[in-house]
Amino acid sequence: MISAELESLARTGGLGDVVEALSLALAELGLDVLVVTPLYGVTRLPSLTTRWPERVTARWGWGPSDVRRLGIVETEPVRFASGGVRRVALLDDPELFGRDGIYGDRRGPFDDNALRFAVMSRGGLEVAERVWPGGPDVIHAHDWHATFAVLYARLVMGPRWARIPSVLTVHNLQFQGVLDESWLDRLHLPRAAYRPEVLWHEGRVNLMKGATAHADRITTVSPTYAREILGAEEGCGLALHLRAHADKLVGILNGIDLARWDPRTDGAIAARFDEHTAKAQRPVDKLALEKELGLDPRAGPLFGLVARLSWQKGLDLLLPLLPELVNRGARFAVVGEGDRGFEEQLAYLAAAHPGRIAARIAFDPALARRVYAGSDFFLVPSRFEPCGLTQMYAMRYGAIPVVTDVGGLHDTVDPIVGARASETGTGIVAARVATDAVHAACLAAMRLHADGRPLERAVVRAMKRAGAFGWTDPAAKYRRSYEGLVARRRAPAASGRSA
Ligand code: GLC
Image (cartoon, rainbow, N blue to C red; front, side, top):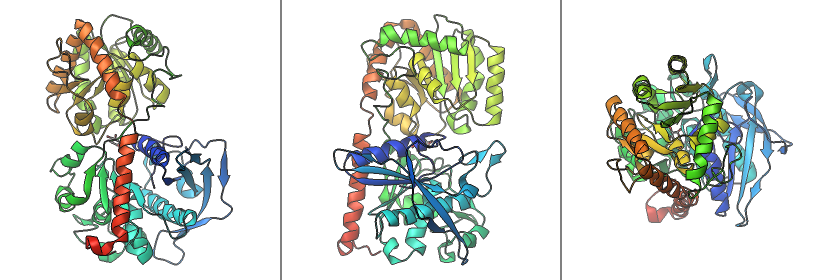
């Protein structure tokens, strides 16, 4: 597996969570999994690591000296009773990766990201070759950063690599790796592939397009998102292209790591609980959260939000509603960082409504857990959401999600129909992606809160439902996918394919 993020080492969002948990779950099923990721300046290295005695050479361009010599740092392998093992190799290239951020720093995105991730991808394949002479059974690339791995293996590294099946997981189609044509020659990408069915898109190089053309399997992180990206809006310009490849596209819903996200054992929260003790214990967590964030402890509902503060997450739909909802008695606990404009707006709202709106402009995983445990409702008003993990974490911790009806939110939250006295459903679902619909959903949440008992029952239902969000089933689906591809490659005649 090749990924720019791995939760335990360096992460900015769900990508890191998923690659971490999926790689472990696959190993638990008995697979030999190697994850390759860069060693950034911000990587949190565990104390136990080993450095490979030799460096690995990664070619990134056509010129004789267009190579990087990468140091390899490996963390302790995780071994399972099944015989499976998960190894993690970090690529050490201080000049390219040893910086104060994964994709960028306070001054903005790094302008050599294409080169950095080309080196990550090629380095990943070279490391795999050392671990498994002859190459891996399957290459699994995550998001646009790792698309180079699919392209290099299929197009430039020779027939042996071209035969190795590849899976590309699209965690977010909004980010496609779009480059000027000049990068083509600089990054070891063949000119012959610069055509509309592969790398060419509207006059530029589009890595996502090229890799989706060449991958044997394209997965997205929820079934609904897999359908949505075939449409104009969520297709982000690639809908027609993806439709031509729809036969190899599949949506596999992400899981969450149920052992690491468990309110019965979580050391970051004030009071631990399960679905039977939630009623008694969650108020303790709520009060502690209010104290920590300087919110007035009041009887009214507390809405939590933990997110990258970006357009995708629907902040512009939600933020204008806050003053009015505060007037009706709601309070808000917001944790996250992101677009400067949203950060400033939130700081302003918090200053204008002390005790009612708290904003921690930070990436703070421990505080996030206290928000899940202490909020009555958890807001995810996304414009689009490939899967979304926070609504699942929130449900696991008994906060009722208030969501838009898109992507993975559609697949994980069952609507509490007509909030009042309803006995089904695990969350409040806005009818449309629009401010008035989000407003109506928040009001429905407040009514549910005022009713008391139905909310308590919804909390129990949400917690129970979340207990089924583990990784075992999704990992088994990925494994079946791998096995199908390997079998097909071994019997090319039967499938009519040639490598
Ligand atoms: C991206 C998507 C998010 C998904 C995550 C993990 O961050 O925006 O919806 O849950 O990847 O797949």
